[in-house]
Every structure is written in C-alpha cells, then in structure tokens.
Amino acid sequence: MDLLRERTGRGADDRNLILFETALAEIGSNVLIYTGKHGANGQPVEYELRLDAGTATASFTDQGPPLHNQLTRAMPAPTSEAGRGLAIARKVLDELGYKRDGEVNYWRLVKRL
Amino acid sequence: MSLDVQARQTDAGVTVLAPSGRLDVAGAPSLKDAVTEAVKNGPPRVVIDLEGVSFVDSTGLGSVIAALKMVRSSKGDLRLAAPNQQVRVVLELTTLDRVFPYFATVEEALTDF
Image 1 (tube, rainbow over the protein chains, first blue to last red):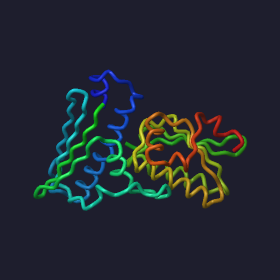
Image 2: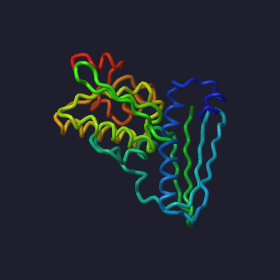
Image 3: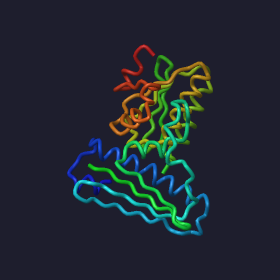
C-alpha cells in the first residue's frame, strides 16, 4: 500500500486508497486464515498487485477450501461480532471476483482510484 | 503482530484503554482481554482511545462490539475516541457509527461520562 501511495502521489487520508486497503486486508486475511487452517498441503498463496491507468487490481491464488455462497452475504446486524469481511470488500470495490477452478481459488479485487 | 493496550484510570473512575497498532485478526484478542479486565471491578465506564490504531478490519470491529456487549452487560457504558480516517470510514460503511457515536478526542469522550 505504501508503494501504491507513492506511485499515485496520494496521502494517507485518500478515501479510495483507504477503501482498497480495507478490502485487501479483508480478503487477504480470509485467504491466509482458511488456507492455513485447512493445511492446503503447504501450497503458497500467490498475490499480485497492479496499478494501471488509475485502477488498482489485486489478485490472490490459493488452494484453501472453496467458498460457498458467502460472497453474497449481506452486512450482518450491528450487534453481530463477525461476518462483515466479505460484505465490506464487496461494498467498497468496483469489482470483487471469485472463481473456483479444480482445487484452486482465484480472487480478483478491482478499485478505480 | 499483537496489539499493545495501555490502560489508565481517570480521577472520575473512567477506564481509558489506548490500543496501539493494527486492530485486526492478530490484535483483536488483546483488546478483548483489556476490556475483560476493565469490567472486573463493578459497572465500568470505558473509553477506547483509538488515536494509536492505524488500521481496523472486520475482526477488530468485532472485538469492539464484543467490548460494548461486555461493558453493557456489566451495566456500564463504552465510548470511542479519536478514530483516524480509516477507522471512521469502516464504522460508517458498516453503519456501526450509529451504534458507536465517536468523539474527536479522549477529553470530549470523558466529558459528562
């Protein structure tokens, strides 16, 4: 994120960068937690971050368990202590892509800055 | 990386908890522990000073909600103070700003508390 700030010349309070970083943290920690929890045969998580013409794109590739229907989960009630991560990411990104191909999860996060 | 949480008591008996670092999946348990300690001695009034929190994710938010429930179930109350821009954005996205009216400074949070 520091590199993105440097390349875009935007400060720490830039709203779009804050939103992108927030989504990235949610998806990234989900990927790491579920990949780690389920062993995933010690396979690495691949992560790529790109900045093209004012659009930031991050992708994750992992061999954790598949995601079932959580992508469309609504924001939980204010008193709920969990279950907001994907809802936040979906709300703040221009595109949140997920696909399962064989044993591999592919994530794509896109935010126009 | 865990979150460091400093606790102090004001002359009026309000506990001020000042976490510093990232309030995320790694840091959330430290905040929960600090709040558990604060509610041990009767109805607590707790201010969480967020000035040192650089970033919050959905797990960190969950720990703040858990803190509110713990404090209220002990017939106390909790206020948030000095959130940075990212924390304010996340509170607003999740509509938790309606559950947690936050104060710009600790001094403001302590007024009439």
